[in-house]
Length: 228
Image (tube, rainbow, N blue to C red; front, side, top):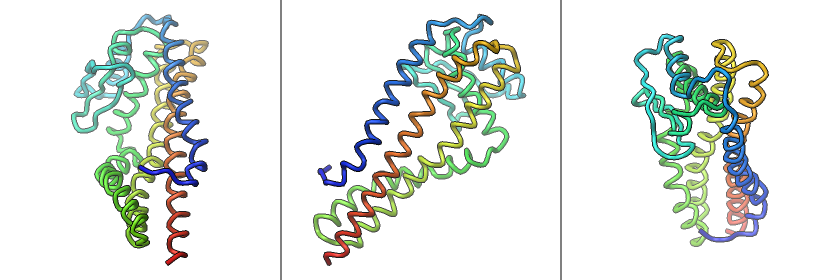
């Protein structure tokens, strides 16, 4: 990696991403100490919502590491971190329901999720190939290589953008289901919303960083292309 003056354009979004990571950790920690009145654990809530939606074949498994919660579309499994799996806080229930939201998206063929899954190999290739091509083109003053780097990086950026509606929709489903199945009371929903909102900010910040980086590369390409 090298420093370019245009990196200052990206810096505010990188600071936002750092703040978002702090915010999600601190918010989860805060509301992990607030027990939900229902007394259910994250694992029980996940299992209950899955069963209520007919997804009996989707297992709820305990993963490893803090905030490692995710839905694995290949194994069709919801994996919860130990704190969420065993926890009965409003934070644990919110996170568990969010991951179940992804499982329901998958089962219902939610288009943005299907598009994101289809883009995974393209985004991975773009992330790996973009920077070597860009740097080689920049130092050799070869605009065509820079352009190819930008094209590959655009795939990774598009993946970040597609992720946003997927995550927002999963959070909306989570809040609706927690309320509908009486796992969380109406007066507790504000706390759940703060936890899921903090998590959503990390995705927004990541997307903004990616878009800003792409814009920076386009400006560099234009500068090099003019010099040729």
